[in-house]
Length: 231
Image 1 (cartoon, rainbow, N blue to C red):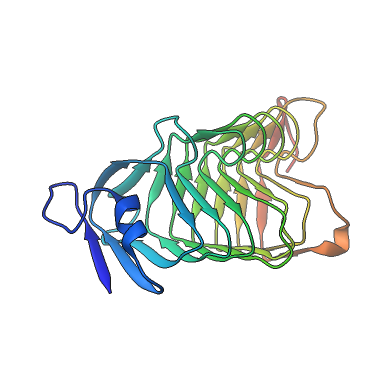
Image 2: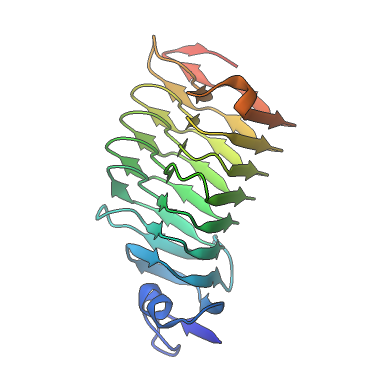
């Protein structure tokens, strides 16, 4: 079944989370253009959430009240076609993922989010039975205090592909991204991210063994520590 969300009250719902809470397994939530000021939680659900017109015209504003999107439990989720901005959380200002779920994040713009700890844009918690794929998305201008200005990955089954990760910052390590779990980074560009002088991984910091990382067909350039370019 399909449910519609519209800001003008002509859809089934005004609020994205209300539509999600109604769904049964494999239902679809179709979101029409507009700005939705929400902190969405998806827990133990099988749902497809997609915008009708893409990230250029459909925004989720976290209003500095938590992550824009939190996915927990053994959820099976496809989340596609949104801008996600102004989230503020301890971990994962834009998106926080935890639990043995199967998650596809696609065609997203994740930007201008803050984390007081890890993962300014996106945080993926450790769970060896989960599967998280981030595809065809832009992660930019996010910031965190600890590790992973753009993305912090703790999980062993994460794939990031066809993404642009740029202009993210951290006060410690991993300006663009930090991974402590196994990671595949494919066909992506990491550019203009920054760490302070004396810190590590302005583009990417790795907290696991190098044989746990697959990097293929990526471009890293103009990433900075302090005022020095590090490639």
